Length: 241
Image 1: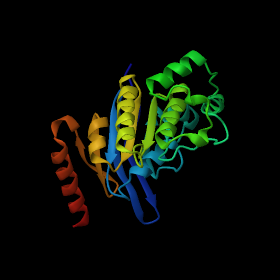
Image 2: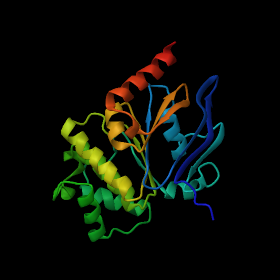
Image 3: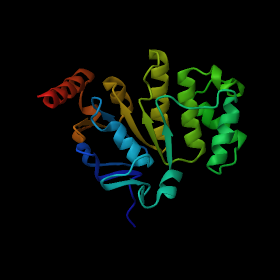
Image 4: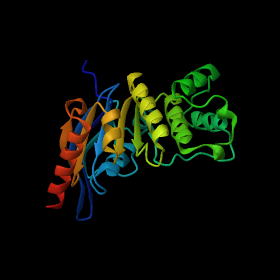
């Protein structure tokens, strides 16, 4: 039996009136892989994530999660999916542990404390901080807790929107390492970012998007950071032409 990619876009298209936001997008992300989407504002990165999340419906084509079509089998697709927004929403008056327990209950997942603590250690969440109110957490801690929520849910794929935006260099380096370890554990990651150099550090593939299309699909190991930057700038100059 053919194994499905964990995330797959098949001719995925989205129109908003006369605006073509996404134009027949195709890609696949297998377990343990990370696809980073690079592109200017309006390139289609956030639209892609929103279609996989079911926040908006595709005009045509398919978004599939673990083989489940988001449009026709939404519950199964959502069950296999985690999402970490640029600003992770937590209940500020609840502790990190209480937030984790609440979101795990929404996914009908009982909290096993040993398993929870193993995930937090894997994500390098500061020891003892899980019992502090979420209002005291730094942005990096919130991002890690968002990842922990997705992993405790048993998500096969996690979507991340600008995960390192607003982090200081040390926190960004730490989160990059955590994302690489998360993928190495068998999770498929789809990451939207403007950060070319962090994308190179995280990704197994980089997709450059322009006008709703993926205009390049790159093995980041095949280019140096400056070469990747120059390639990206060349594609953006073509966009402006």
